[in-house]
Length: 352
Image (cartoon, rainbow, N blue to C red; front, side, top):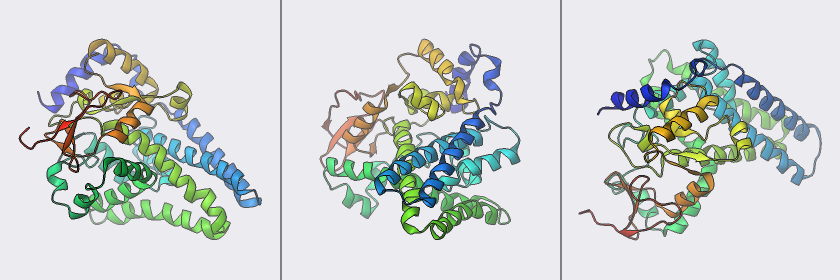
């Protein structure tokens, strides 16, 4: 069964149980974005206009960072066309939502919508897939990193979540800008440069110390929140030759109020099955998937997923195994022996 057939089978069975309005744009989602922009503006004013104790400013930093992340989740929805369908307005609103993270909407759609969603967890074609042992063995820097104990690597990997989204989005800019026509490339580049210029310019207006609290620390916090989701979306799943959302994606569970704040971003399997549907209807999709394919659906609490990421390496061998080149131990992936509550290992062999 090829990729289109997989999606067709899942979508056909689930779609008939969903209301028609689930497939219509949901512009009311923009009210949530407006609320976050107001919160960010108020925090900026508080930091910029008053000489507040650093501990209070740290609180404002966390509020701004959480708002930045939530705006990124909304931008993700907008650029999938689930909020507004008009292309020019979609791109403008998407650019505003992604402004704190300085992501070009055109690059995002090329990288995320047209590549990641089409080739999810394909070892060659998905730009977000973690590397295989074969690839790692050809990279001198990574070979030296993987000589470190797993616990040390896990610590630095989790610490790096605070910069990973920004670093990866800049890498995607370098990779995908080449796929645009030469006349379009300056526009695409400006969509990243202008936000960065505005944030750097803010440091001259507010002063460097206040800018640290208003933007730098919030950016680290936003990166961590966004990457906590993105890392659990697929990195415990196997690599797959066929884009099967039930095999290559994981839905994490968080408190209901967190889902409200984060626009249901936790429903990731549902999103990969219906990327053009507003996430407000994903609980209905989840209900149907669990009725039809309960043994194939992957779901776990966010805390358990993060613990499993900490305890397992991020190198693939034979698509279904996560292997540690340092200790020669292998771990199962989701659907292939991984039990987050009791992670087991076995000796890895290239003959497996």
